[in-house]
Amino acid sequence: MSSIEIEDALRSWKREEAIEIPFIVANRIEETLQTLPTRTMLRRQARVRQTTMTAAVSLGILGIAWLGLVSSGGAPVNLRSLLPSVGAASPAPSATATAQLPSVKNQGIEFQVTKVDYDGLYLAIHYLIRMGQSGEESEVREGSYPVSKSAKNLPTIDAGILVNGVRPSSDQPATLTYPIEEVKGNEEGQVYEGTIHAALFDYRPPSFELSLQVSRVGNKKGNWQLNMPVEMLRNSYTDLNIKEISSNGILHITGIAANELTTNLRYSLSPKVEDNAPFADHIELVDDKGKWLPIYFDEGKVLRTAPLPAGTKYITVKVNQVDMESDSAKAQLYLFKTPLNEKPTQERPLKLPQGDAGYTLITGIEYQKERTVVNYRTVGSNPLQQSAWNLIGEEGIALQALEPYDMTVDLQERTAVYPAISSDEKLTFVTRKTVALTYLPELETRIDIPQPQ
Amino acid sequence: MPDLAWDTDVRLARDGDREAFSRLVREFSGEMYRMARTLLRSDEDCADALQEAILQAYRGVTKLREPDFFKTWMMRILIRECQRIGRRRSVSLSEVWAEESAEMTMPDLDLRAAVGRLDEPLRTLVRLHYLADVPLNRLAEWMDIPEGTLKSRLHRARKQLAVWLEDTEERGMGYELH
Image (cartoon, rainbow over all chains, first blue to last red):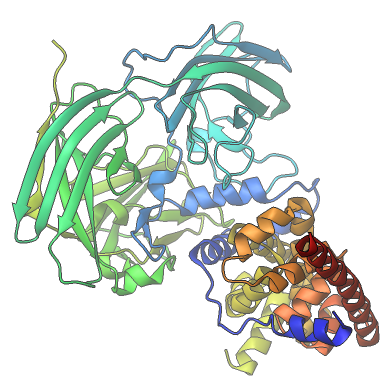
């Protein structure tokens, strides 16, 4: 080819079409902007050794990702449901076949794996940490981006996992930070326990060699590496044939499988709407105490949620509908920031906008010695998502609640409990445009859970 | 965003205003994404590059001497970041073809593959100038290289591409003869 032909060929490459920013990019840009530090923190960081921003922004993402539904142009995805959750499932005996579980000692700290559960998608690694001396509870690591204040200012660990030598999910950083809880203190030191949860989205072998790599425990950097074989849990699976038919559509439930990690419902949902109607229908599960089961993943034919609490006698399957043409559905990640300028009360609450779903009223703040309690009430059609607001402290850091918020369906007055906050600290509430939900009660159904004999 | 609002926000951002900086980035994000997408294979990589570029820019914006230079300065940071990620990825030719060959003819495939073989900074230059249609004078600002130098580099790139593509054609004819 001649140079002129090359030039012509290259010029024909030019992109003619306008390119819209895809959701994954727009979301990352917004989350990065939301977690930019204040200038004060930036100057403080400039005096310490610089590390990569990736893990810190991931923590910012964890904080922001408590907020409601996110639409990717197709079915809405519950972003919070994809977060790793801390806390073991109900302590039923596991059918996982694992060899003797390993432990390793480094920097005077022993790290021991006590149990590994894997259901073919979700992995839970339970562990104990024995410290030779009292662990310090520092949350700001030298050289790191400011992180969320952990619940109860507990120590945390940085850990990463490899499944047959590869990272289980390509869209996560190599290591994540996990909080740990003190089990007991004794004369020899302190013992902590925790659970690492991971979802093997990209690679799900039925059995594999697991590598756990811990690079930090509390304020101690080190190298704790453990390897162990893992096999898949056996599900308890029950075939069902439950059909609910109404003028709004057909819900057909064909099976339920439950284990210590997840509850899995096999179903099909055929709403009766006009062709091209912009509605998206979803199901959700509520246990027999009236609490939502957090949704981990909805593959369209299989809904995976948190495991059933021990002794659950039945669950309720509810069907809701979202208008995908609504302002909040199209808004993707749109955040409202509402500063706290005066102490709210029941008579003069602070109103937090939340788009089409409604709003949340902050009805009180109690500054106690050991904790700070925020009282609130959601007003709208999507209380579960509406409860997922964030509280940002003066330094621009998202404060982490001591307890997960109560997910009881019909609760009116709710509380969020944080570590002790100074009454002088300037606080900002962050909410997002949240979709309104229309429930279809005629498609609701109850599934009895077989009880052990 | 009207020019006055943009200029005001640049000055505010330079003075340390986080919200002003965020407004600027949001306003500019479309153009930045299009540029990143020209240089990187996947949206995940574009998200990584944009994230890192935003953070680097935020750290350095208070040292920006000329507010008028903000867009150029941000693009420079982003280009460097895209190049860094591109080097890290080292996508194989077969992956290139798998992603981009859906509706292309063979000569197009050869040209794209050949561009992918160029060394940096020629590869970035060719993609930005031809694929993203960035004028040379703007590229010169973004890459902080005189326009004349860019022209000679483009000439060198075209010559190299012509050699490679001529080789490809010859090999193709040789195969047919057999």
